[in-house]
Image (cartoon, rainbow, N blue to C red; front, side, top):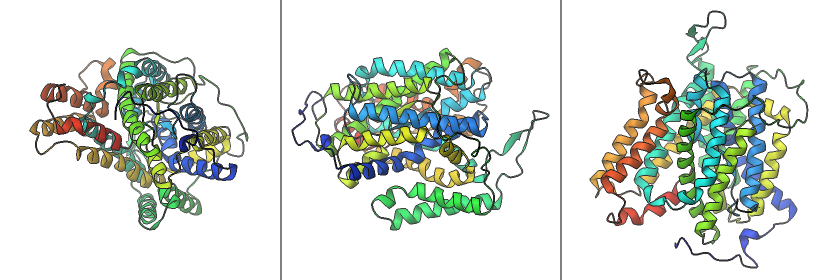
Length: 470
């Protein structure tokens, strides 16, 4: 596909088609349900790491849904130099979870540094989108596959601890010391997490169409229902919550702009934009749109805009959700107006605190059963991308995969590996995703170079990038 080739929208272009109102709403709701579990996962993870009370986690979820809706409308509808004008749903990226957890663990940083780094990274994304749209040759399948694999693997401990009922150690409120969590690994927690996983697998195997696409959400619903029946869910605070409330910008105070945190999040932004680039190319093929470089730049700018708005609206870096690309392929519905209405639905969800509190009441072990699937699928997608790399004929690629995966595992298997390094570098050195990204890009440049001598490897770069899912 030529970077400059661009077909002007035709009179009956299916991307611009507007289905009847009833069908439009149903299709939009389907898109929302497919991405909903992923959209709320990051606020739950980060809110838990920050040790926020339930009402504050609910606020993070409200803000997340509101921002997802606003940026989805901009991406699908198009506003000036923003928006790729394709059926795209926007959500919070998992790629930023590692750095954000590191910032959350540092008392000098916390949520205000997370939001400040998001604002700065959003600006970075907006201004550097044209450059990234030209840099795809730096990210052949061997690089993108390694990075996405590490994203999934580094998040697996989160899902495992969720399934066991939380963290193995808790900080005692009186003494401030870490003590064993007596509920960690309780048989009932493991059993419910296993049931959630089983339901997801059964629906995936025997479900069809829409039902199969929302298998994770159905699994979580079953686990939640069992937990309610066993009296293990607290609904405290829901009655006192207002039916409707607006998200207040900068609710947690002025953002903190820490240099290392900003640099770390900007690197995450590069990874996010590369992921989106591949997704846009795949979506262009599915919808029959030949995308110009300007189209790609507008889409990438919107990732930056979503991250910028997220910092002001008390939420986190945003990306274009690749899960929904598969839905376009399955349904054959190419209308961008479906995602515009989907964005409006997300905004409506964000306006109702009672719904957010209900979501925040879902026990962690219920999320664990679903998390094993969600995060494992990210890792599996990375492995799938690596299948498009020349691992048999190019021995250098094996070194790239080996070293980048090794770098990515350091923070997970040896959390104190970098304890003697300056504290200012903590967010960077404790993010396996970023360590893997730096290693993979650097080694690929060193071993394979930037020329086009790799033949099949270069020829498959676009295919591998387009095939991957976030």
